[in-house]
Amino acid sequence: MSYIPTPEQAEELVKQYNKEPFHIQHAETVSKVMGEFAREYDPENVDFWRTVGMLHDIDFELYPEQHCVKANEMLHELDIDEEVIHAVVSHGYGICADVEPVKYMEKVLFATDELTGLIGAVALMRPTGISDMEAKSVMKKFKDKKFAAGCSRDVIRRGAEMMGVELNELIAKTIDAMRA
Image (cartoon, rainbow, N blue to C red; front, side):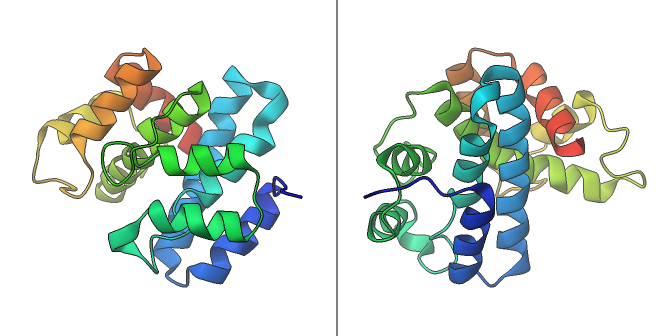
């Protein structure tokens, strides 16, 4: 019988497969951001959104070349609910998976995964970090292709389009979510 782990159970699973503090911190950040977006868009399912955010890169440290493919296998072996697996795998759509984000929650994950990395990098460059950061600071760095080059601007743009929001609005909401 498949199940949906709590955010805390999901964190324990992530820590079983990931030892790098960066990967664990990224999972925690995305989980918190997903929870903040859920409070606005799907308040009855905050824990579900947080669980998906926590699990989204469960396979990345062990299988970076097979990201999302291995997550699909691992989560099935762990008897995780199909809805969670679809959401996790869909965040790699067009990158390392052909599973399209369908639900709004999946589109939020697709859009914010890369964006949290970019915002985090901008925060590291600022004496006040994220505390008083505005979207325009991130937009300036967004346009600089060399800054945080590993964060795909194309994926962030496509995510905003999927969500039906302007890039500035997505950035502002993600900053607020990371600050919360």
